[in-house]
Length: 166
Image (cartoon, rainbow, N blue to C red; front, side, top):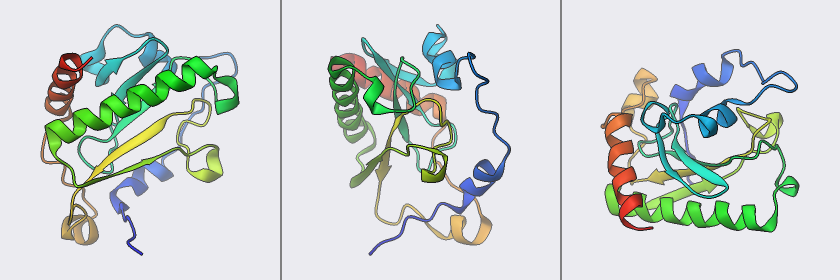
């Protein structure tokens, strides 16, 4: 079995996180309601969800697909919202394939704090492109991730690809 090691994320994992106070919007709700897609690294929007680059990525191109509806549970989404989420996930995977040419993907969801959810109150689906040897000596020895391209540049390329293939 291959193991995904991402030790550079430990600082983020251990850092104090303030869940949205009851009645307050989550980080993902605030991003979803914002008009500044470039500043927030939003790469695509659909009727009931959007796609955003992770600012603490496992790998370059790490996208999260997020419903606009703030919920911690899939049961709170309608069938239409679920379908919209899956369709946008598929579009993002295709765009990542076209733009970044990964050799594989990790796609997953962490529901609940104990499952590793960083923003517990707002479910989201991770799409992590993978390449052979993508976790190298830098992560192991220096505790540093090498993301070879700026998030704003990756976001611009993915936005263009997603817009061209609606």
